Length: 362
Image 1 (cartoon, rainbow, N blue to C red):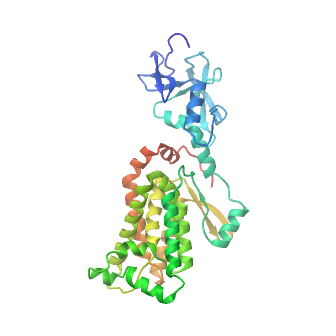
Image 2: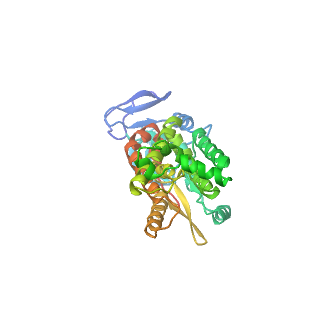
Image 3: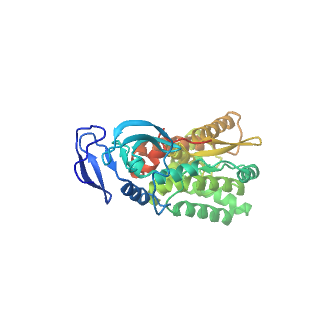
């Protein structure tokens, strides 16, 4: 538009034309707010979302809240406050005369990524149905509701295949299985003597039964794709192995002098649970209360899982390495807390989805 534009917030400051990811926008150097003309904002919205070819931010707006008391810098119409999306309560000022948008400093990234945020929230807000009920009723495994991974999780796929092939190689031969466990499972007494240190790695790829393998691989797939997407292939593999090794170390310290071998990817996967909880707090998993299927926040799902581990340990139930689960989960929480800022800086969409503005339906 010809002539100088005034900042709707500061009123006396002029807006300065500048480039934002290839589109011209107007910014106030005093308050940091940004004025987007509709066509420019639509182009940016489309460019920031892998699941749409064109953007129309006005069509996705939530309800109008009130008049903002600010005037459009282009056409001088009074602007209205809208929620950015129905289920994403970020307020922006919109001029319904020209459909331009005034965005406060700190909100720009959320507005530009609105289409990606919309698709992610739609994925998280899907309802349970008869198919999810039958799946969980038969398999006793939860259904996940979370943002879709942007990459193919090759490391997660490879880990599932490798674990499965290793089990097939010995799992149906009793004598061979005993030989494998004797050489490659973690035995605390053996490790204490300084021998078999490699078992901290090898035990992570062994399982005691087909059911043990299937359960672990399902949870690896459930959490691994999102974590691998957030971290990258190499970092994900490294942290998976770190969680497995440290979970095994906790198990050894809790069972000193024991000769009972411990196997399974459970400790490593429990570490993934801890990272997943901190980086995807708005995700949901279903839990079956007898015959009633309910979506739970991952915080509550993992709280129940952790409580069941402590209960099983207190009751003295054998056959499960509860300390490896608890230790792995603690390691995962520590890694998750340490790397959360880095992960969210690298993946701003995840930070937006973890915020209080997201309205999750459960």
